[in-house]
Image (cartoon, rainbow over all chains, first blue to last red; front, side, top):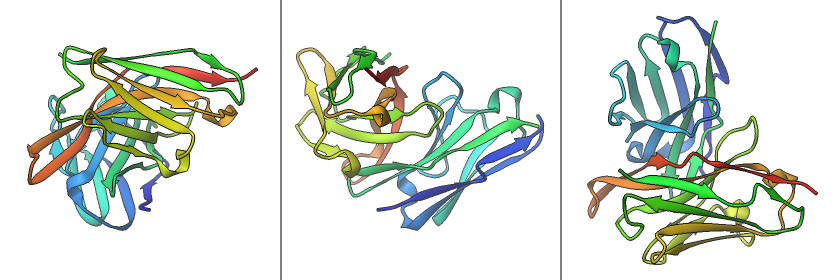
Length: 108
Length: 126
């Protein structure tokens, strides 16, 4: 069973700053099935990045994904007020979807 | 535009059965997509419950195996979730989500959850 570990648990930053969120898999995984979601309070998750680095429709280009093997990163180049939220990575392997525990990006 | 809407009782007794449906509008459940249930306990992260394809293929989270059943009703264009022997630990917001394939779905499919319902809170309590 693949475990996804996200770090840090909480990231305290100011608007305009750069955010780097990590998602580490317990074993090497295919980036084809590595996905990132954003969730705001009281809302359903929203698709951001799929296949590790492809932005979903209508996602601003300040969001980017990268990585391979066991280490994946979601980068927000310049934080906008609406970007403060919780971010989850997700992976699919052997008929099972797994989520990381999430990283909260909060206003410093 | 496809929309997903979860519905069901908001309160379930301990040891009872949780039953939810997800109505799909604006599209068909009988396409190439898979349909998922995901839950989120209050203040916690996301947990995948399982997925179903209209051809009858189903995958479940191993941690819930034996208690969970997901089904699909093509005539009603909806999917359903049943969870037996519930406890307080099953209290959560339950989401349905569409598992969409892009790229070459036959040879090298790229799957992700592109569409989510708003979710419905189910509390297990007497």
